[in-house]
Every structure is written in structure tokens, then in C-alpha cells.
Length: 272
Image 1 (cartoon, rainbow, N blue to C red):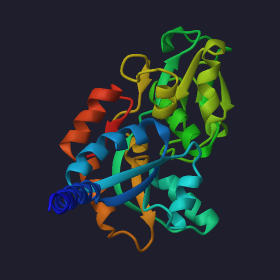
Image 2 (cartoon, one colour):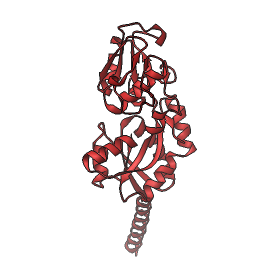
Image 3 (cartoon, rainbow, N blue to C red):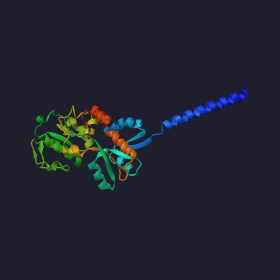
Image 4 (cartoon, helix red, strand yellow):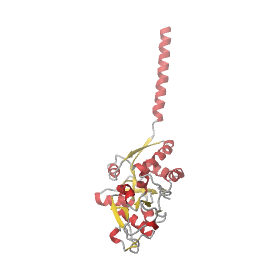
């Protein structure tokens, strides 16, 4: 009889332990959302969104890429639900060039270009022969030149758009040398040139704040700011993905707006 009682007790304990295990497994039963992103600021913003989504029953899985091709490829192959790293003109150009089908779901933020000191601390200090480093890709060079023009350093054709290069400069108000470099290299020549023009993510990576360190930066209502909003994108046909919609709602929430404003000091600006 004692043996039987002991056996029953052991069975009861086993059932309790099995029940506890089932509860723990169930606690992890969340709906997955997968997203491809650049490290800064996109992945950082997503990490904050992940906390909010967890409370809503979602598991946001973030895959970080250093380049601007793989985040599209993994979405095109449907390995990942969406990406958050680029602006619409870049995605449109990629679609046209590579036969992809990226579709914008929503705009989240923009990263204003800024003019930063190199060997000169202000625009007024510029002299003939000084060099100003700008990114050399079409999109970013145009933004840099528009910002230099807005601050009186150069003059551009009337209604200059977002495909201009330094060959389109009409007049140099100061006879500077515009040095075109790959975007990631611009910050590295700060000690060697009078000024540099950087976009938000490269400024952040260089430890620079557009609010504290830049001499001038793009206005919120500028053509560039409105055009180059960083977006969440999906493969065509997946626009109604429930998880992506939930992600966008959180990324556009007041909580994430406040996080961006508190964290990036103007280098990243929520798009509303």
C-alpha cells in the first residue's frame, strides 16, 4: 500500500511538472514579424518597437544588414516580411534596375543632411581653394549640393531637382573645390577638408549630432526631406500582411516618435 501511495504521489508530481512546462511553452507562442534593417538608426528604433509589439502578442525578429542590397533580396525571396532601411527613390531605382517589386507601406522618418566643420568652423570662414567633401552617388550628391546652395556657397539652376551633380553648378560664390567621395568615406576626411556634407546615419556613426555639431541642415519642409523619407517596404502582394501593419502602427506611434526625438537629437526626425 505504501508503495502504491508513493507511486501515485510521483505520478501527481509528474503531471504538475508537465503542466508547468506546457504553460512556459505557451508563453512564447507569439506571432512572428520579420524585418530586415540597417544598423543605425533603423535597427535601434526597431528594438524599441519590439518591446511594444511583445505586449501586443508579436515577436519582432530583426535581421541587420550592412549593405543596401540584401535587405531587398530577402524580402523579394519572402524569407523576411519587410525591410526598413531605404527611401522610396532608392527602392524605385532598384525595382527598375533589377526587376524587383518593392512596395512602400509607410514612411517612418527622415535623416536630414547637415554641413559639418572640418578645418573651418563656419561658412563665413570659407576661402577660395577650400575643399568641401560631398557624397558621390546621385541621390546624396544632389541633396548635398542643394544644401550648399541654400546656404549661399554655390548657385544652382532654377528648379534644380534631385539628380543634379557638381557639373550643374551655375556659380561658385566662394571658389571652393567640391570633392566627391563614396558616402561612407566622407566623414573620414573631416580633418583634411574645410567642410563636409553628411546624411543622418553617417553623421551618427561618426559621433556627430545634426542638432549640436552641424553648421546648417535640411529644413523639414525641404524637397529632400519630403522625398527621402525612410520607409517600411514589402514585396508586391504582401501589403496587407497583418504583422507588417502592426509594426507600422507602432513605428508611427507617439511612443516611437518620442523615442526618436529623445535619442537622436535631430539627426533622425519622425515623419508625420
